[in-house]
Image: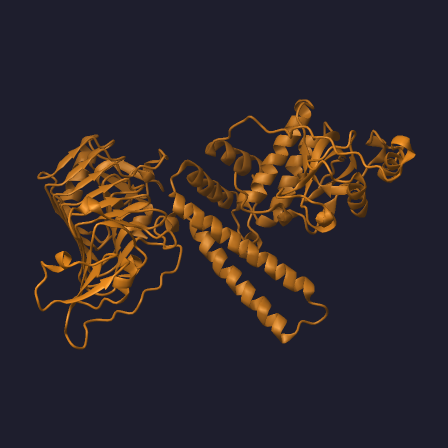
Length: 603
């Protein structure tokens, strides 16, 4: 499992566990004396002899698989049940661990440490850590905050994950640390009994907290409901694990976390380098990094709020300036093909201006309003489709399955339009790696005609104030709804096929948005005829309405049940003027048409 927060989050400003020598099995011999004795005992009396390290035993790993509900119960109802602020979290985790080590103060573990520092001269290859078998002696104390430190000594036989690791080097490093290490860097080994297994599991939970749930800005933000905040982050973790959030979005989220942590380390290094009073340049650099961290933390907090996360976007978009028509008033047909022949242009009129491009991006960059882009069969990259601002026609030449455009993974959107009249026809869009909808109509009007849309993220989105006319198209594979209509949008759908959408692994009702999803308030306008909507997870058409009665914070289905529910559905469809009678809806998991109540719609 990927680690998003490294353990050095809790390795600074440490508080040591007091050592009680009467409780130690080696109370009469100090770690230093043990090291000297081990160094003196070598074959043939050769003081330079260094035996190879043995292979260390396996680290204990819990076989228990925790569900989302299990983690909520553990962290929110048990560990942080009395925490009102983030400042109390470290103490709560320390108390949780102390409760486990009361019955077992000594055990054998693998001490993991970064290969940098004193171990920098050792050839570690690509190993992420150095692991050494140690004997741990811990004495629990009340009121100690993490990171708790425990006394360790090198265990016999000397074992490490690097066979050539010199024992003397390990002893020197531990001696510099007074043979004290963070308890979270000590990983108990297998086969030591249920008490040690319980300690190992508690340490796993503590590492999980610091890796996935803890945020350094919690104290700055002065959170007053810490358990509730942790529950939100557990929901985010669960949504990532079960596939509710599309893979490309997860990857960008992780990259944002990595960038935040990189800035955090950069700021820490800069502050440590300041001796005495900071210079003007150092002050400016510190403020700049801190400002960047604030922006990243704000971006990350979007993900922890379920209401904000449902809307996005989570990355800024920069659109190119609209060019408008050429000053000459002339229009150009841009041919996208590696080689252009006379057969390609024989259907064009004699007065047509022609420009040939080897790639789609080149054609789109030189387009003015009124131009057309003709794409010949083959696979093309959609480098510039994410920022359509001029009124152009983009069309495939020949059969739509022969003209394939793949999304650019580096872009947030695949196709995003702000033009007043943009048309795409006779081609296939294949979404790979982009986060937002396969087609997003942000403003203006878009026409989609005779296209195949193979989604990997979300489907077609029509935002507030925008309009869409879609005819003879196929949409499949969207993890959300096939078509999502925002409040105040307009759409006309005719003779389309929408199937196998809202296909997340999650079984949560909020993810079951079906083929067409309409957000009401203000109401969108939808006209549809001769569409085939089938095999979607959820309803064929879903109507999202505000729950003015505040019955619950989660979606509540209303369809096909008692008379009140049926009446509610009829009223909603009449108000929206939605007529599905001339469309074919079948095999959708929750039925043909349904209403979902959502609290955030009215916000």
